[in-house]
Length: 263
Length: 277
Ligand SMILES: Nc1ncnc2c1ncn2[C@@H]1O[C@H](COP(=O)(O)OP(=O)(O)O)[C@@H](O)[C@H]1O
Ligand SMILES: [Mg+2]
Picture (tube, rainbow over the protein chains, first blue to last red):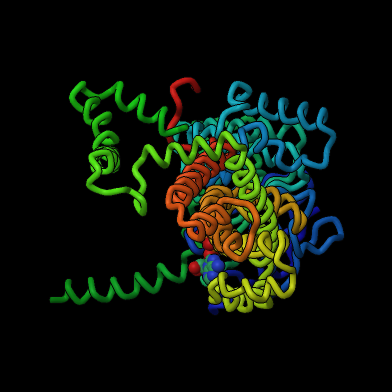
């Protein structure tokens, strides 16, 4: 199990990106994290991945306090971050360097097959489309068999069609090994298609505003009424999370509007 | 080699007029030296000058042929080549290792870089007397001097390139928990390879410069020896022949280096040769 205990992060420049974020994530659970830009979602994932350390609290994974990247925790970034000097297959096998060659080959071939890019195995990354490159990044992360996979807005740079395609693909891949997923997104539809639970964050400093359990059977029908209902609940929670800012704005605009009316 | 291919495809897609320009351009460049050489040949042939201090091409050719026939040319060529190879190899090894470590470790960089920058400010020729005292007049001091010349551009190139490697790609290495050595070998060195090749080539260029200085400090063979020998015996043909040999060797080794490294840079090559794909 993955536990976040009162995570706080203050950057050296004084920005308080996170404050008192606590979260328990079950094995094999898919948690989506949504929230406006700048509310600390990336900071949170980087703390879980061990790339950065929180300034308060701790990330605990199976009795280990995470202070550096962990063997069983993988991460996929918004950009594919493929190594341009390695072929697609070599990129996928990047984390398997310590494995015997035969095993590495077999696992890479299987991973490429699972993301539908077998015929691209010997191609340079520069020859891939954005969606293909991100699929390679997914394969590279999954081939190492992580128990926790963190995804930081992995599909946000892609067009809507490719995005939906990759969401389904991700679920498909998840079903193979059922790793725990913590998936950051600003796309509410994406959160509801994927997640067992949606964590809504609020900004300045980043905190958990709300948690919404999405209790829909998979595969989920984006058109169904239940989907729509869940979506409205998340959107309402997002609205509430911006509560304070909205009210301040409202106060000002209302008084101005009122003044205008009065005149 | 990629230039040839580039020229080939470019000329395919261009009208005949431009193709002629492509051929004409290098010919234009040759016009001046060939014209001068021919002109001088004629001037000497007509007896207007005796061509003793400035030998005409035919005499330089004779000198070349003579040196080649006697086996002298090969002996000097090999001596110089071996020195450059040894100095370049050592300088490259040291420059690459230190550059990589200093680029990777902030502590080592702060410890070592200021001293090296200070040493770099010393014109390398200034080391000659010290090297002779320390290492003797023979091969060791020569190779050391060349190595020093080669070291600096490579050290600086590798370190600067490592310091400018994209953090995002380094994080990929961190996520896969690469050791320090693994990070250098699997992320940093490939990432800096394009810059590295440029440093190697300028290092090699300096190697050729310094081999002359090294051979001036007393050698019994080598192209630099030929230069000095030609001066002392008053044989300008020998001097010009040695200079030409230097030019050819320098250009050839640079081309070989570029060609050897080219396969490692295929991934970043923007241009695709027609045969690939
Ligand atoms: N390296 C950094 N140094 C200083 N401030 C940062 C850094 N990274 C992020 N921040 C700040 O922390 C806050 C949260 O950023 P981030 O986690 O990237 O948000 P999100 O991913 O939700 O958009 C923002 O105000 C951002 O400006
Ligand atoms: Mg972000």
